[in-house]
Image (cartoon, rainbow, N blue to C red; front, side, top):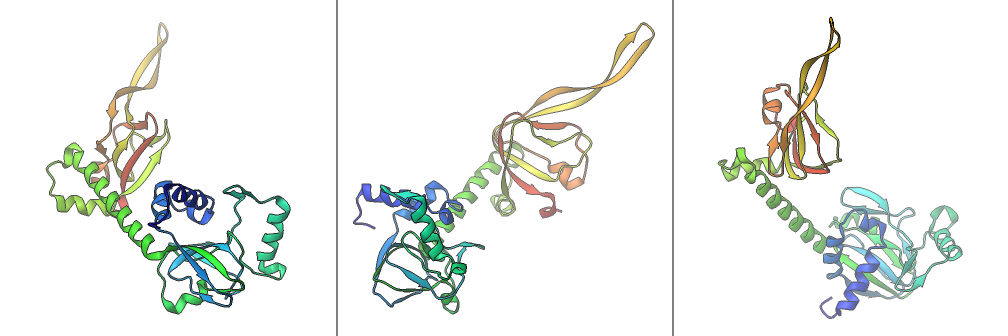
Length: 288
């Protein structure tokens, strides 16, 4: 990787963005990081390649999975290990060619071969006892690109570290937590999940107990309180009606829901998002 030019790094990144198994799990920024740590491997015909220590992309040659139906382990979810991108670096796969390759790779059609642009292996480090699940036998001299599982592990650790720092800063800047001990805030960060709400979403209605404590990272929420009023219909008749009065806003780096969750007290107001809101939440089941 250290010998690749900037243009070659961009080309590798472009190729990674065509792989559903990667794009469905990783952001563009994480793909960019991994693209700089890919290594190229060449294997002779008849070699057994154990895919339990990395995620492989076939650039040249044909390989045969060691099990009939090959699955690719990605974190804790399973997904199919083979794919054919529509285009990469000027190479266009027409419909007939793509269908013929897919047919060749489909076990039910009598074959389970992995060809150019197919993938196998695991981004998670797996025990050697499970190596056969992710292994292939080369039927030609093959060239692979490999994302080492240890590089993905480093990326996950760095991602978790950055997320914890972001959570810590967010809670620390909320007014009611500024005097809290750092250790206590660390305990909260372990419970936090990120969630986004669209504009106009009702977070909680007046009279209900909220199901989480929220820390607003971006956007804002409007606070409304229901007020009972009377409308004169005729000289001797009036009608009772309820109106919502805007009481204020919950802005970035503000929190809400602590009293409602901990004491199981209903909200006395209604909270509605003013625009898209991203917040860190701690669910009531994790606090009670």
